[in-house]
Image (cartoon, rainbow, N blue to C red; front, side, top):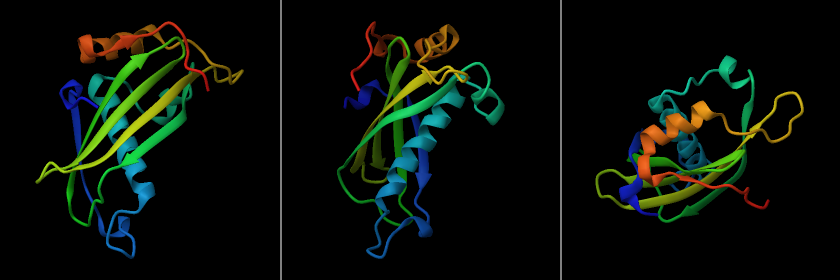
Length: 153
C-alpha cells in the first residue's frame, strides 16, 4: 500500500491486557485497532457515529476483513494506524489500513476491510448514500475511486 495516499492517522498505545503469554499483541487485537481507526476516520470526516445513526435508514456491515501481519507489536508501543476509503462502488466501499510502530516506523500490519450498505428492513444491499460519497470525496480527493460494478463475493 502506498503510504502517501493516507490522509488520516489514529494512534493507539498497546495495553497490558492486549498481549499474550509471549509478550506480543494477540492477533485478534490488530483487527480491533484497525476498526477503532476506521470509526475515528468516519468521525473525522463528519459522519455521525452512534447507535441511533447506525440503525436508521440503512446500515453498514463488514463483509470481508483481511489482515497481513508484518511484525509483532508489544506492550506499551505506540502504534500509528493509517486508514482511508480507497473506493466506493454501488453498495460497497473499501477501507485500507496500514499500522506502524510510531518510534521506529516498523511496519506492523496491513488491512483491507470491505463494507456493504444494507437496507435495514430487507437486509439486501442498498446504494451507498450520496451524502457519504460526498463526505469521503471531499476528504480523500483524487485518491478515491468510484467504481461502477460490485466485487464478486
